[in-house]
Length: 109
Image 1 (cartoon, one colour):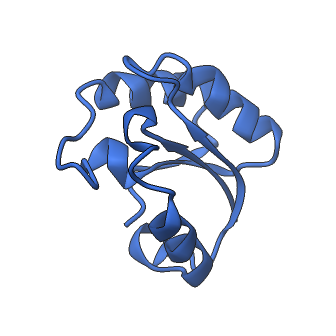
Image 2: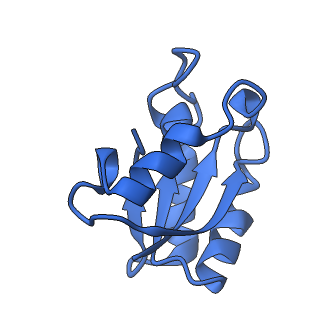
């Protein structure tokens, strides 16, 4: 499976995404069901309130993503302990934009 990962722009200077790359490569964390996956893109939400996540998710699908993954910095607040307050709206808009055939994975590790 090919995935596109959307991460929090506010935490990108604190986290290089190492854990995200490891769990996708090893098929761990959110990828235990799928096994190892290939990353077609690793982008930010574009900053609060996450409106840029919608065109970026569409771009990831155009580049081959079969699933859009919201990194744990958005959904679980890693590493700062503060989940995105805009996540539900961002997720719903991404689902509407990419269509029901694209799987949504709501965390990474």
